[in-house]
Image (cartoon, rainbow, N blue to C red; front, top):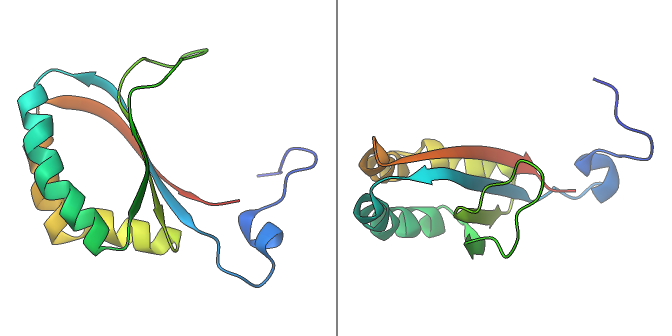
Length: 113
């Protein structure tokens, strides 16, 4: 897919260094806040054990365009591969099961610029 004018890939912008990885979660709806709280108690340690560092956790100050005023989370990893491995790991997947029927969210793994 061609890139927009003036854009470079993370690898081109970083030179020989490895780009950071970001796990970005935007919640669309939370129907069971107690399930989200139980999830957070398990997910937080699983994510930090995988090398994740929480950069953003909370409600947006302002939402634009199609944005919803719901919880947002951004977690930084040393690489996108580490972010994916943490998400797919057994410890995180056990925590994630607590969200079944409790939230609707969008989760993306993004390579840093």
